[in-house]
Each structure stands twice: as structure tokens, then as C-alpha cells.
Image (tube, rainbow, N blue to C red; front, side, top):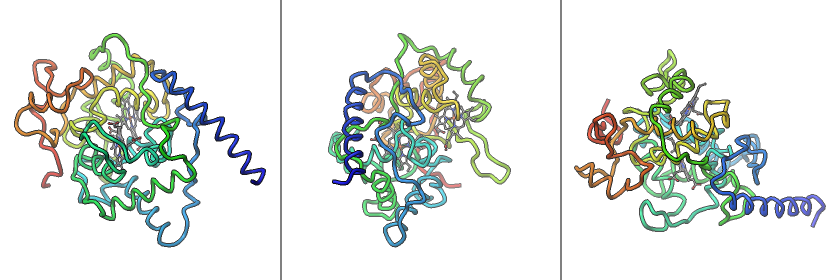
Length: 308
Ligand code: HEC
Ligand code: HEC
């Protein structure tokens, strides 16, 4: 073993025990959105190799950051994967792809079976992108998988890595939508719009992505569960000021965002109450609950790409 390799494996062991310690305090806020404490640094973009494999990795990166342009057939809203998985899927605390890649195949409660990584990616298109799943084996999935695999270079498989997912901040006793609305007006509306629809540049491109309404993630998406939104927001929003909201404010503003209409859950079969029972039976999921006299889901725009 070379000295460099030995140093690396010692570092790795130290970091591995760190992440076990991290698990013991699960529920504590993610203190380091910069990822400095993270167990893992993915390779830099400049290291993408030449040749057939590298070309597929680069395509995956492009799909991830400009999804409508490179995988438009499967997208039904104004989002890119990288709007929620920041820094091109590299940032710890923003569900980084390197931590995801090594965690599959995995059993998912969402569909009650073991999912491959490719199947996990299909779900992102169906729900977060309000689109439709690319068929297994489609170049879109191969490219995204190649990109995630490449980012995970040197990471251990089967380990819940430090920085995975959106670590949830400490939940307050009760959520306060009115307070969430105040935070939103003060700290979010500037970029995401008072109506949550985001902002477009003069050329029609999306400058700030929508948080609710017909062009955002649908009711089946992970971000529509307040726990996920609170974790994402606490670590990453307002953009560039991650970690500045109190835990309580992060939860309240997350609840406020997820108390608005968005495209229907694609699993909807005609009854909001039935859909809630089957897929949203969670106090931190407002689908099918009554907010301001209106039941969320009753007036949802349809899910999936809509004819222009
Ligand atoms: C609206 C925000 C949003 C968008 C857009 C989005 N995701 Fe996600 N993604 C999430 C959330 C939230 C989770 C965690 C969901 C959960 O645990 O249920 C997640 C989870 C994942 C995971 C699993 C992470 C893990 O550690 O297990 C992968 C992989 C992933 N997304 C890839 C993608 C890809 C590829 C796209 C684009 C096609 C995409 N996502 C678009 C919010 C988003
Ligand atoms: C300075 C502008 C700015 C502010 C202020 C801001 N955001 Fe964002 N937000 C962004 C941008 C840009 C992205 C996409 C990030 C990317 O692609 O790298 C984003 C992404 C998001 C997303 C995931 C993508 C989506 O559309 O669903 C959520 C949720 C979100 N912001 C919530 C908030 C909340 C809540 C606040 C207030 C606490 C907030 N943001 C404040 C610019 C901002």
C-alpha cells in the first residue's frame, strides 16, 4: 500500500466512524450544508474521462441540470433535477447523487418492493418532474445512472453516507401556516414569486423555479411531504443562505409551501380521500386535508405533461 493510499484508508475509517456518530444524533439539523464535514468528495467535472463512457457521463450531467432540453419527452413542469439536488447533484445535504447511487437496490415503502437505482430514477420523472417515466434501458436513464456512478467513484456501497438526503431539522410541537406565510413573504417571494410560480427571464427561461401551481412538482413527489421540504429548505434556502432559518421557521415555511395546490398525484383514481388513504396517510402530508375551506387535491391541475 502506498503512503497516499494508507492515509486515504485511515481517513476513510475515521470518516466512517464519524458518520455512525452522525446517525446517533439523527434528527439534529444538518449543520454543514457546504459539505465540509462530509465523508465524501466526488470527482470534479474536469475529471470526466474522454471516450464512450465519459460521453455518457456528460450527457447524464446535462440531463440533470437542463432536464427539459435533454429529456423533454419525460418532463411535465419547469423544474430541473438540479433545482432540488444542488450543485449538479454534488452537494451534501441536498440529496447528492453519490450518496444515492451506493444505496440501491433498496426496498421502498412507496411501492412496496426492492427498487434498482434505475427504477428510483423513473420515480423522479413521474413525480418530481411531473412527467412520465422513461422506459427501463432508455438512454436517459443510462446517462443519469452513468453520471451518478461516476460521481460515487471510491464510495462504499450499502452505506448510508454522511450528507445523504435532506436531513430533517428538529420539528416544533405544532406547525404554524400563518407564520410560514410571513417567512415566505419576507424571505422567499423575492425569487419564487408571491404566487409561488417562480420567475422567468426575458427569454422565457426559468430564472427561479416554481414551488407550487401547475408547473411545479406534483402531489406524489417527495418534496410534497413537509419533512423533505423542511430538510431541503433548512440546509439550502434562501439560496446562498442555507442554515440561516431557525428549525421552526424552516418547518413552518415548508408547511406553507406544501399547503398549496400542485399537479394531481399520478396515482389518483378519482377520489382524493382514497388517494390520501392509500398514499398520503401521514400528518406531515397535507394532500386531502382542508386548508382555508378547500380540500387540497380537489382542484389540482392534472398530472403529467399537458398539451401546449
Ligand atoms: C422538486 C424537487 C426535486 C426534483 C425536481 C427532483 N428531485 Fe430527486 N429527490 C427529491 C426528494 C425530496 C427526494 C427524497 C425523496 C424521498 O425520500 O421520498 C429525492 C430523491 C432522489 C433520489 C434518491 C436519493 C437517495 O438518497 O435515496 C434520486 C436518485 C433522485 N432524487 C434523483 C433525481 C433526478 C434524476 C431528478 C430529475 C429527473 C430529480 N431527482 C428531481 C426532490 C427532487
Ligand atoms: C435568491 C433567490 C432565492 C431565494 C430568496 C429563495 N430561493 Fe429557493 N431556490 C432558488 C433557486 C435558484 C433554486 C434552484 C437552485 C438550483 O437550481 O441550484 C431554488 C430552489 C428551491 C426549491 C426546490 C425547487 C422547487 O422549485 O421546488 C424549494 C422548495 C425552494 N427553493 C424553497 C425556498 C424557500 C422556502 C425560500 C425562503 C425561505 C427560498 N426558496 C428562497 C432561489 C431562491
